[in-house]
Image 1 (tube, rainbow, N blue to C red):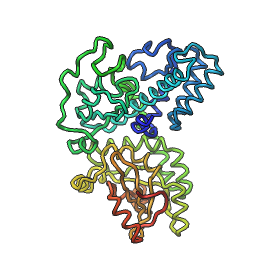
Image 2 (tube, rainbow, N blue to C red):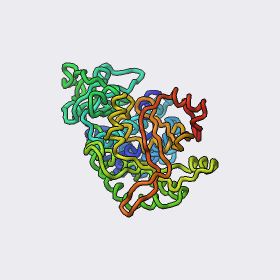
Image 3 (tube, helix red, strand yellow):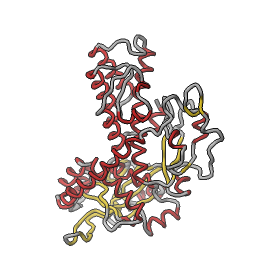
Length: 422
């Protein structure tokens, strides 16, 4: 399972939203192709599972497996218990260890891949990328056609994406990425000069789909539900406008609790803020990216440092302004995809350090290619609608040279708060 783990990693909020949208409509079917193409975007099916209670239990097991990033072996244990409790017999694969292993792998991987694709499609559309990029999933047994499409970068309205937006079949771990420029295409692992191979539209008479695509998979997976998923971002922004002032004014410990409890709302609102900032080219109001976690607050308190509030904000100039331009020229700018996922990654930092000279917090985070670093100025004063207020402001964001971070740790100008730098 190393290929699917590497391709899809831990689930993200829009992936879970896409999965739950499907789970809300559980459809009993005799075969997977009882539903056609985009109909799968809005329905949860397990071929042969016709009873509502059986489907409900299988749906819960799939949700736990994906949302909690459980292993396939854990899912298989759930599956065995469910089919025993519900007395389900006659399912394809029943009666042999190999058959059960195959059937559970298909259920696990298909739901993982399609929910990821739907969430990723919503995310990429929200970011309004100028180019979509086909990325091969580095599977153990690669399909030659999928390798031929690897790195191809095309506008979102190109007909290729109507049939070839990944995944493109059973077990396919290929995925979609995005970029705003040729530099961004290269940073995301694409090739601006790569052309589609001749005959990419040719139909395989055995499958009725384009050559290299399995039967029933020649559609834009998740494309029909992107609007439903991303529309929740505006709802989240509206909710956040009500809650954010409370996070800003509560003591740090309480603000941290409130912000963490609203992580999904913060993430959705953050994606919309990033989209607006990159599309419009800058906004007057900073965006809420998250809160300082309790463990960091406690570590700072032990050093006699007590931020007034837990909320962390970002000025739009970091995404579309002079600093962004300088980092782009230096080749260490964050990609649009990194910005989109920054709020989620901020809750799971690789390391948090204290800059002894500036007093800033430095967060080392995972990134699309390598790592990212953001510097947070504590107790930063900004002008608000009702006068000035105190926040914690992200004052820089870029891809660090880890050797330089390690050097500063060794000469004692940085102090490790939590995690590990490597």
